[in-house]
Image (tube, rainbow, N blue to C red; front, side, top):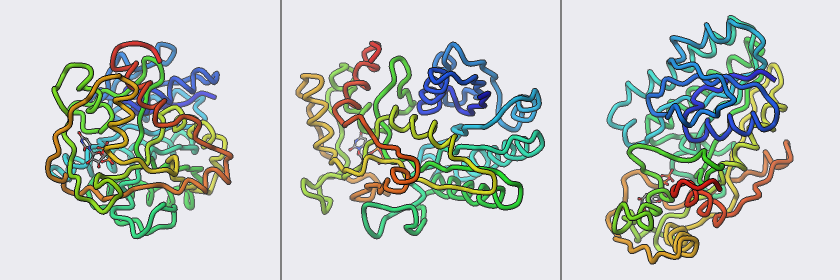
Length: 319
Ligand code: UDP
């Protein structure tokens, strides 16, 4: 298939672009490089630099595209609280421009990169897709609003849409990995200690109502996540909007993650326990039963593999 990957210079987008190419697809990456890296775009992909508003219509207008995988977004919760207008514009506004370009050029299949942040503070875990969606940040609100647009475009304009709500994505795929600036995610931050960049890692609170007092999250390997996108592509049917959670279904505490990092790197990794980070729920674990049942997806890489691959990436080795 000829596919457009928006945000293919970012972490998840570049990994999925690489997996699509490995599976024999033709990939065009559209990314404005506002947060991504040009050298993260797989060599076999054609790269167009631009925003969705500037360039989506022109790229799709060349014809032959069968589907879009849409990753381009601003994704930092804290930044979204400080600058909500930026998030509404860049996430919802740019997405609408993309969907209109798709409509204009008869491309109706889309796989959308969504997030567990749409659920906010959960009433119960594991979280199923029909749990109340009450995002606690503008970031989560913009992603939920895009889901609303996709539901409408499926109903009115025969889009075949699949939204994948990611939990905590980690790991790398060879030379494709996580390079955020600033980095807020736990595993790359922990690995900065054995890399020699920082002397210790900050643990944001150890007084949560969890077995060891630190927050519990559901980590999923970026390659397992990527494989779900390939399955979702085949499941996108005109007139339907499917929504799937993507997690491993098991939770690990911050302390457990740090222990795995110690085991993988052989470094003692000193920690400094500080105050809670505002907005962090104690436990977030996905129910991924729906995508397992509907598409036969299952995660195959455990937390140790995520850390080992992230560590190889951090040291510039291919995993
Ligand atoms: N965390 C931490 N130190 C860090 C980064 C994250 O203690 O340097 C904690 C954070 O408070 C949360 C968990 O690790 O409980 C996962 O955070 P991350 O930002 O990776 O993902 P989130 O769950 O917020 O999407």
